[in-house]
Length: 507
Ligand code: NAD
Image (cartoon, rainbow, N blue to C red; front, side):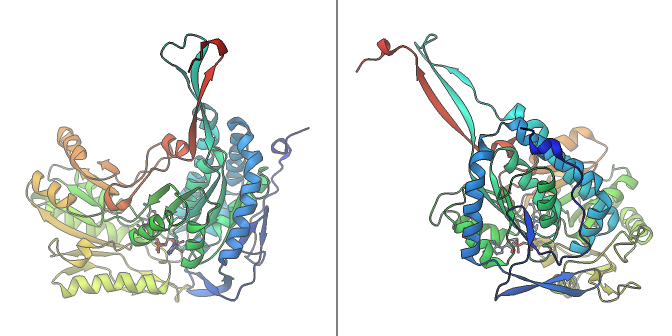
């Protein structure tokens, strides 16, 4: 029999609209009716484009059962066979690159130039896990004392079963792929609940995986708000939770994971990162790093370093150059335009929350050096656009310095000594990322070792590669994505003791 994976033509075609449905079940996109619905909003135009039902706990349970049934055969396939399907899916993503990037803009409001990068990374992720699965997912032969050749142990690396995944809205496709790639490669089935603010891309991924040959039921998408998420977390048929979102929801997810069964959790949570710029830094690079740490995706990036510590010797020059670069480069506009670098925020509520942070900065005595106001770009006047803000004149106790903003608001914080910068940088309950910009490499590595964060950037910021560990220290979460450990975290090892010599046992 020819495996379906060898029969693939590019069957996937990105849809023109979402009328085919926002749920993905048994290998197909479907519409589901429900009494409780939520609005699906297109951020760039600031309009509701349709409504979507919330999956009830009963529906979640049905989908989990379908996943459990489908997983049995998938889990028995070899990692090489599973990997082929993921690599085929990566190929389909590349073949539909531009259409998918445009969908990502419609789903999230980010500029097209950034969405294209997300699509590349999504393909890379599936290729990576599809490629390493056969090399990583293997057991060991273990010698035991006195065993000789007749008594020994070996391990098998087995899938966990069904992985319940819950995503945030800032990287709708990439967040999904980061979870789905290792989960499927390891032989599990996935039930994914996207954020209701960006529900489309994970459904398109379902169609891509089906086109790549994935059997029905192995990947499903249930839509909904908190109640649907809770139902997934407490469902006894789910064996592990993989969550991306805020710290508060992460706490709820971890509690729910222990409500009736004991589920391991990978938690990718919020951040309040710092970048420390020394007065020996290359000025141009320092400005670029501060911008990379703050303005991608309208500032809605979990690793963003809104706390920009600048050594006093370089403060004035850095501030001038930063303002100049922002004015030159941060073009706010319709995210579908090629030249736009700042698109729309995720929704009106979130936009107002960011504006509220900027207002709090003014009330606490800060000065807003640029931006920080809603703007109405031509042609997309009703979208949720903010001109990125730069704030100064605040101490470490200010609200914008303590709390995660998740928007484009960079705060400049002067410092004098290395020790002071590290202490103030670490003075947060978050620990997702941090950066240091200096020409003194000994100092850079010394500081990198002291910063309490899962990712540290030296003379760069917000780099992210699929083969490099990603995850948080402290309240920014636990578990890692994007690396070999993430694949292993979707498996469990079974130890098997063997005796080939019956005469050797005694009691
Ligand atoms: P959120 O916590 O509000 O929601 C995340 C997801 O959880 C959504 O799908 C939501 O519907 C669901 N949810 C809400 N209540 C739930 C509950 N009680 N049980 C189960 N699920 C529930 O976060 P958000 O606003 O979507 O995303 C922004 C946050 O995510 C920020 O804090 C950001 O830093 C963080 N984030 C972290 C990473 C990372 O990798 N560390 C990446 C992206 C975003």
